[in-house]
Length: 285
Image (cartoon, rainbow, N blue to C red):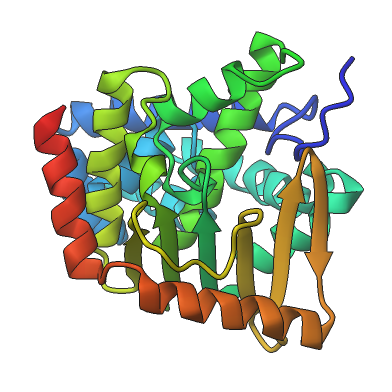
């Protein structure tokens, strides 16, 4: 047992992880038999190759409509159609897979129309690669079991589906420069992580800005935080410190955090300048 307060994974003893993994493997097998690349198949079902890859590996939930299209396109003969009810049931239980303290945030993030992040220690979860996320959880103290680590990584990656939705949310990041220099897991993992920042940062709804370490001004020498604007709701903030999370809904408190974030964006490098900086760090690895 552990007193670790992080969110539960997207699949517990209900077998959802096994279901997603099995469906992903079958979809990959049938796709390859048809001679289709992930890009080819993704164009047919309305997703990019990265999303198809994640679905086939079981780290992203296969949408029921994708499964229905796959049944016809890949000549599954009704095999995938039989799994659709179980998949819908698994998706309906998503909110029960998080501890009570985290459920409000998880639901808000999933429906957010705007997401803004400030990170001062590590790459934020929605930007993490699988290898980076695995290392983060593996280094946590007290230690987590291998099973828990695998489930936590799957949960973190599954949240990244937010980038695949339409219309996409407006997303911005302010990352402290030190976050880009910290070689968590080694230089190879850092290289893959920086490449992923460039990939996600190229999306038209995402802006990534770097706060240079040598800046003399800084309005938030405190903890990291997130700002979210859920659909049809006011903006809220979320912070964590030493495993103690806090979802902030008081409008005045949220306004103050948003004000600090706006000032940080003004002090940080522009998205174009930040991209150039990241590219330079990649060349140095």
